[in-house]
Length: 166
Image (cartoon, rainbow, N blue to C red; front, side, top):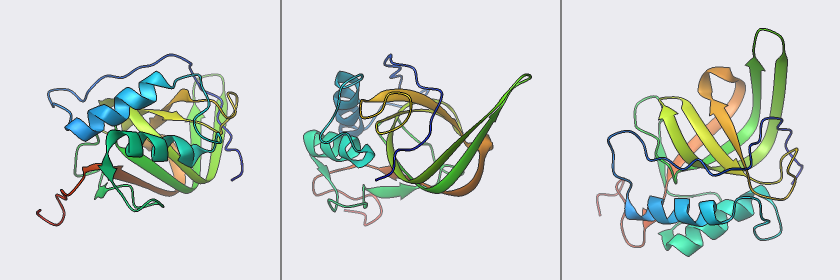
């Protein structure tokens, strides 16, 4: 997988549950795993490896490819720490008074580690600049996404699916 371009990585864990909501147990286990790996290489250092190992360690039910759990529509549902986000041909543009920073992701996988508000997230991911194949932390503001597809997934405990009503 090609290394994604990211300039805003901070190497400290920022793991805070969504305001007023208790995390599902499997999400908490995903967050705990990711938090324990900040600054280290997970698996082969590919972006997908972080999500895969977090889900497997957490005992989550998933397809072992890109079906990370139940799809969460960030516009209508609350995204939680421990949710997985899949990028497909995403272009993000950060603007401030004095600069513009651009990020481009082909196929990329990350884990939500903090929810600051609707559409305002902090992600953990690897195989991005400047940290390379180590787990780092970076912001994601949905208002700064200019194109592409982002899909959020809610991890599922083994044998349970909200979408199937089990």
